[in-house]
Length: 365
Image (cartoon, rainbow, N blue to C red):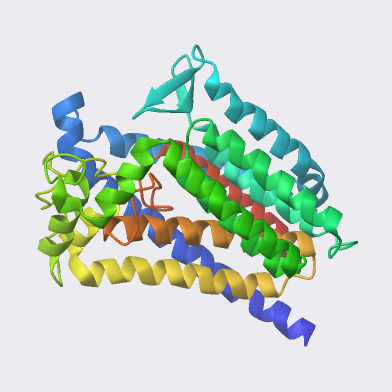
């Protein structure tokens, strides 16, 4: 039976990679379409963001190929050090001389001509280290293991909240809880951990007025259509304008300075406007197919570290995609998360492709 599963694994792997390649292709097309007007007006070059996106694809692909040459044991042994390094690197964003503040958040490090977002590295280092932690089955049901798991989550959350990055904090907390549940961590202890995070989240929302304002805007964006509700209302207009087939690739009206962050957080709205419900459904189908094929591959892994790393990668990407789409259609408050493989953002793109290299290396014989 095991030999049969091994024979079946390659088709799932190629389908998994083919799905991701298709998403990357769609991302390149719509990053250019969504950003061209903005880039031409602000930077004098319609291709500016598309060109940078291509550079991100090249750099990410190089990282992927390099990681494929690493021994599996080396990746596993480096998991704790990679997590610690990413925590330290992300913490450097609190040093004004090194950081760059955008939209009120210090999430970027600035070294000469190089600007990148270290939290994109942290989220995957978190997944790899948590897989490393959970693959050690001894005393999995003990209270000490649950406390250790909680400490890992808390350290990561505090590091992200200091930027602040509330959306990524929630995403990683949920990813960690799902991974721990799959690994068989004590459900009672897990439930206590989860219930303890709810009041903390409410307090964090209460002490920051802008977070509470986002929730109020989510509940009634039309109460301030020219202010706080402007972005989500424009997203609704874009999605509604696309109808079933869309108005055509490159023909978006909302990208003409109506919809902010049109090539990053709200690229799904532009996709829905230009290729309609049919195209949007195609993108969502690709994301579901990526999850399905990835899970089929993960289930065939005998090595727990490889299996949990794959699970974490899939859970994180699926949560991020779900939240991004839910924000665009008004189901949840805005979070500042991009659509994986599609949205513009070189830090995210390079880190995601590098993580894909880790996953492929671990699941290959």
